Length: 298
Image (cartoon, rainbow, N blue to C red):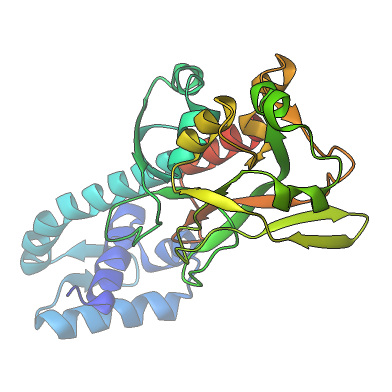
């Protein structure tokens, strides 16, 4: 492990050589002259060699100091270049971005829009990993995750992107065969499709929200699915009634392929979050993707 005091001493030595004196180095580093002198003295003690010849008018490297400085100067330049590169990455959208994303959201919301995002940032390469669970973002090398539901892990930074409305829908084919439920309390007499909560393994509860009131309904279901795309396909085919996120069925509702059964019970929502490992200076590529998702869902 690098000795931090050694690196500090080398940095001070570089400033003294570059500026030609202790006072000017102190001004450049925001230190006192005595602080600079002490840092050089500690470095010389650490190395067991005198690095500088000092007079009241000038400072010059000793032979040992010159050999040492010639060895360490290239490393200082590499550190400076790395710092500039890191600073640029924080402000410039570039490099490879790895995203862990909910399969349903990827397929039904973002699919078809990623090309436009990449066209906006030609220096960016995007890798989308669709998984049901977030997992360990750091161990998996993932920059950001996009997930529905309240975050479980306290170790991740969570930013809410939107509250997505939940709708109860059926196809005209189903309604023609079974009739339309007039109120949520009619649902136990209908075929409903349950969706499995990946966190618990149980189906999500059916609830209806209006003006602060929450109405739970126990539905009759012979079909439970864990894939939202399959659930939506079955609903369109007339298999049963399901609850879905409004952003996923906008086109089907507009075209009359699905019917919103209870528009007067419209207050239930499901949160969408972006999750990432650190709150300190997220890279520009992460901020750009989060903004893209936010704009897409809104």
